[in-house]
Image 1: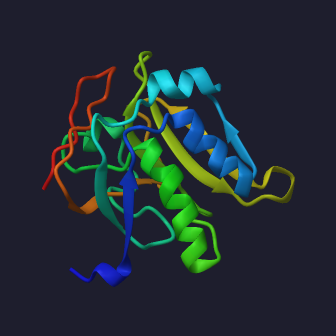
Image 2 (image 1 turned 45 degrees about the horizontal axis):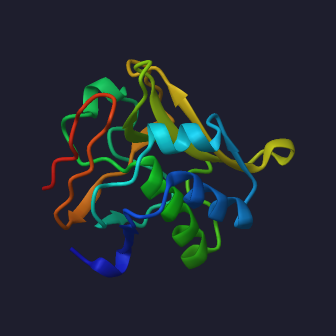
Length: 168
């Protein structure tokens, strides 16, 4: 594996998700389906600092066209928190936005059973980073996952579905 083509993401367990989102909002226009309190409740930080590496590709390409239900147990998927950090680092390194043509499905699920996703909306009237949700059974050719290609030990656990990100 060539780490020069990877983006290193370190998720600090002491920083609430709402604070990460505010930092993103200082650099980019952002639309989120969740208010700060909901971000902190639905997407809590890991219990300890976590470092993982993700492929430096503009579009999420893993498991394109498959639903979250089909892929959730197969790979260590990116979380919403990691995407906030990834988005900034990808743009800093490349000068272009990730996910201009597709959406990234996140590991995170919500109490209602929906799953979180994110993307860059390139259309002039709506140009912003968007955080939204979809049904766990929904699939489309423009939706995919970002998979951790190299990890250090992690104990990120979804508070709603109880799934742990399996390190490979």
